Length: 179
Image (tube, rainbow, N blue to C red; front, top):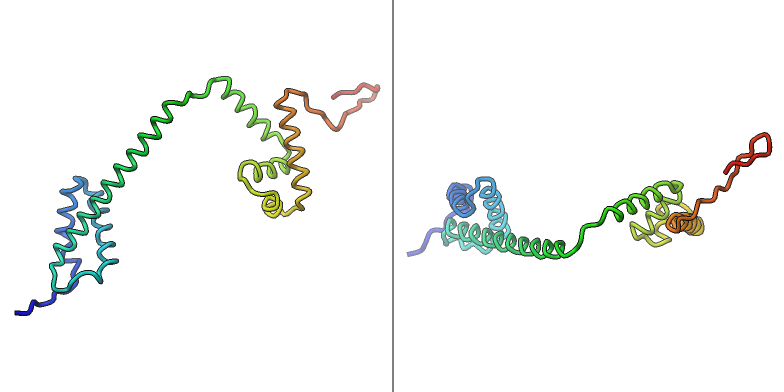
């Protein structure tokens, strides 16, 4: 006796898939996500389904395997987070002096002229090459290098605690100079 081929009626199996998913994950939202993942897998592998086979069994098997994959992924993620937490526990939090110093360096960076700050940011923080940074800013590479050099010099002066040199001096009417 020849077995009659059944249509690929996934919609007719949704209720069973949802029930099984809810029993696996015990959360309606997660169950819906699991059913969704399983249906995507089923659609992608629909060519491997034997038309004479039991569609419901095949879909429930895919749902089960999707659930197992999620559990493994969750365990792996938990293990990585635990390892990262163990590493973080070994490090010491930054002291108040370090936090204050970091704030001062940040402020010094933001006090740089905009053109110098842009150039230094692209090269030092975004890790662009000089050529890439010059292209991004639309300036010649020599101009970029000059801006970065001036910015670094100004930050070095700040770091060494040297007073900043002012390039312009104001001279009032009696010959007194103010820096």
